[in-house]
Length: 564
Image (cartoon, rainbow, N blue to C red):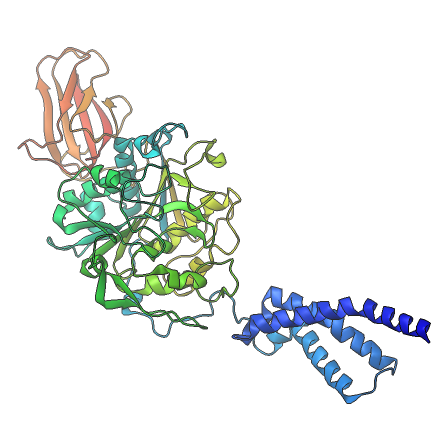
């Protein structure tokens, strides 16, 4: 009798672990799908259903087949187990739930009117690199002190010209902001996720150099410094600060800088971002007042991996554009329990008329970047020869520009597969062109343009440019330095010249700008200077110009890029 009891107890203990595993799997499914049953078709839920079926359903059917259990409850349990199997094998798709929870199925309650407008240069993204833009040794001092402002100026100018197919920086901004009226305001959103007021560290944060490059062109285009605001009102668990070293590095007087700390009117009393998640809720969040006041917006994110969202680029940059970003994290962080790939709060943020509705340009700062973390000091990138990327990305299409920047991060192998969920959603909603590279830098939908110094691809047609005199391009006349942001350009005659010689400057349209030399007799080796003015002493716009040297019946022409 006692021996039989021991055998029965031992048999029960052997059966118990599979039963517990099956119950645990079933409980997991119930917890994960309780608020949203359509999640039953997610891969992890299907795996749990298969497990519960294997450890509970199959044993029950075996028991019925052997006629060992004949109670009605057993038949009911088998029926439930069969239901589990149907779902596990794809029954959810048969019931029309197969697409639930997948990318592209969510739609906002209503699309804002601005989403129907024509977007300039849709699908185009420009990548510009100059290895000499940075020179930090990853050990000495602050990395931001090892950036060449002149080179960054040239990179931004070349990128804007390439993006817009224009020949001058004024023309480029005219294409990006065709309805500009003097007196309008523009806001530049930078990223100070890791900053304090006066940080002694090398935490990755916004650099002033790309901002300076933008400011020069904006002011030349017609914006008054007082109408330009650089801001980041990030707070919650962040400090909400803007480092003084960043403000002090601005090369233009009169620019406004707005942060959260010490700013009681950082957020609007009326303008809010409305969130429309398919499950749960996020309360309406007040928008930064600077965005409400602005007529145009430029987003300047940093190329870096985000430990929870996968990546932080132009869309996520705006978590610093409204009050208390903590509330949206569960709907942005791809790796946490409860994340729904059919919805991403970054889309609702971008759909706000004060954010996506006003954005005219994205400039992604990848001068150093960080492919490992959202914090910490920059580290060398393997794909750039264990050096800094020394790169910027520009585009008027935020989706396409983020895609190209994200692909560069993906090549380092540190970014999770769900990092592009928000971009696929944005593409499905028609907010821009979504595509992932088929090979490094290779796209079929995105117009990806890559420039590397010496920037001989500036979007300029090297053929005739109109006007009375049309220069012919040759390789003989030396221009140094080129490109240049210096007020003086040196033009060196490359050989001995006997007889009359003239050296004239033309703009990209072939119009005569200034004569620098017109003499009967000139000695070779002469160096001439140009201070960036026309024949009447007026400052000319940044952009492409042509130097034409005529001597002894011959003509030599060289293209130069003037960067303010």
